[in-house]
Amino acid sequence: MGPISISEQSFVPQPILVVGDVMLDRYWFGEVERISPEAPVPILKIDHIEERLGGAANVARNITALGGSCRLVGALGEDEAATSIRSLASRAGISDLMLSDRRQKTIVKIRMVARQQQLLRADFEARPQDHLIEQRNAQVAGHLFDCGAIVLSDYGKGMLSQVQTLISLAKQRSAQAKQRSALADRAAAILVDPKGDDWRAYQGASVITPNRSELRAVIGRWADDADLESRVRVLIDELELEALLLTRSEEGMSLFDRQGRMDVRADAREVYDVSGAGDTVIAVMAMALASGHSLRQAVPLANKAAGIVVAKLGTAVCTPQELFA
Image (cartoon, rainbow, N blue to C red; front, side, top):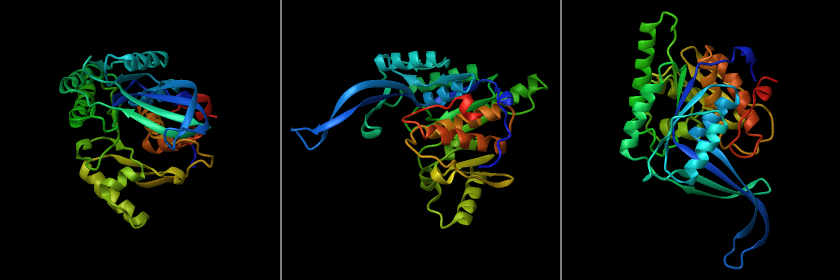
């Protein structure tokens, strides 16, 4: 891993706005002692249940866990899962800008776990209604002005449909800020955790942060690293991006920007659970950029944070003490 040049004292960002698919992660922990007589499946004897913020809400939770200020926009129903999300967000210090509708169902993922091994995941999903997308745009426009970065956390559940509207709003905010204040010498960073096989909707973002499978779905399989770099360069130009950060699991990360390519090796540690690691990466990147640091300064720190959270079970966060140790 390359040197980390960001100190804890300089890691003080402007507020960050997170927009995306908010969900509740439920963990049912227990022990398997026998097989069901009804079907050849294990019986999980539940010991305890935990609830955690998931999806875009996990990005927000990572930001506030590191001492940042975060505003969260997403879609909820008016059900007990929504009540849990709002309670968890409040306890995490997240500014709740989430939208709700009684006809909407809150997204919930249930993971059943025995001896730190996931046995089954059950998902409850619903796409947001059109009027919630309109309310989303108004909410973002009203709370974007003093933010140092906007994170678009796309889990493909519909909250980031018509996402180009949000990118345009963020760019307008930056232009207006420069007009109002000579001190506003840098634009708010627009970071996207992408989904799907067509990324044209993300055109004009600052940086996108795919993993290998997500990138492969867009540019196809690459023969070698030189082929990868060539394909990524074409993509960056087509989408008018500043950079693309590829997370490569045990191989670390690769940043492709206008200066070239920067590879950062992963921390050598045992991996327990990679769920939510991408949320941690984009949260740390957003905080670094909103603190005035460069992409190349941010990547080693995000890589270290990822190494910390994959050693924890489930969607997790790292603390300032862990990150800056």
